[in-house]
Length: 143
Image 1 (cartoon, rainbow, N blue to C red):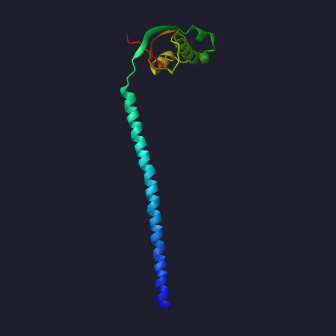
Image 2 (tube, rainbow, N blue to C red; image 1 turned 180 degrees about the vertical axis):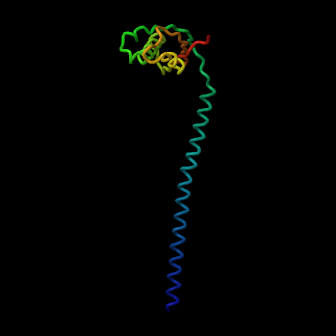
């Protein structure tokens, strides 16, 4: 009698173990599905980036502008560098009718603060390009 009850208990334990293993396998499968989706999403994003890189925008307008920064000297000494960069940004936005993103190259900024933030140049020459999508980029003209 005791042997039969032990056998029955062992069978129940085995059945419970099998059920737990099946649950674990099902959970692993569910976890694998989002990982596969994430990989697919990453691949799609990579393809989109490649397409964006392939689309090289040509500038519709390209001019060399001479921008006066004299108004920066009307401000306190320690603000002149920042004021000069904002004057450049305002001038470009006004004359190129900025509708999109306006970016100023680091070389322009470094030229403005070349002698320190307190003594920007009185005027600066900038090459400004406006692209088809409305973005504007400002850099230094080639000598």
